Length: 104
Image (cartoon, rainbow, N blue to C red; front, side, top):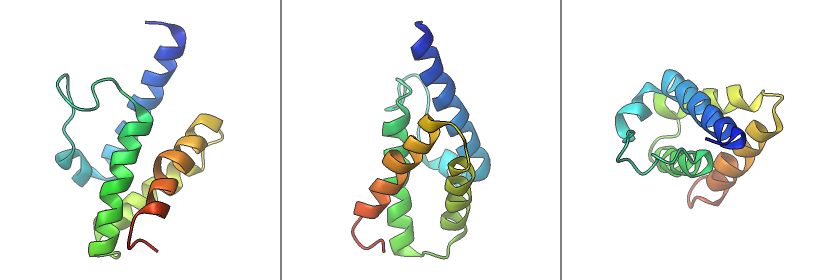
């Protein structure tokens, strides 16, 4: 594996690990593993899917524990000083939420 790919894998593993710790309900929902949609460890794709699911949950019940813990996660990773992590928050999560119908 090339060094830059190793960095991408590290970021993916770190962000998904934190997500599953802070929002354990999502770990039960998303399929991970060798045959999963996310086996290539594309952080942006994974975060886009998370944000899309979160958008649906906001529309259904914006005060649910899932929504609250999801925003705790977003706020937590948004405090990073790493430019790549901040970009993932903006592009991978917030822009998706912004465009979700019914999420205001």
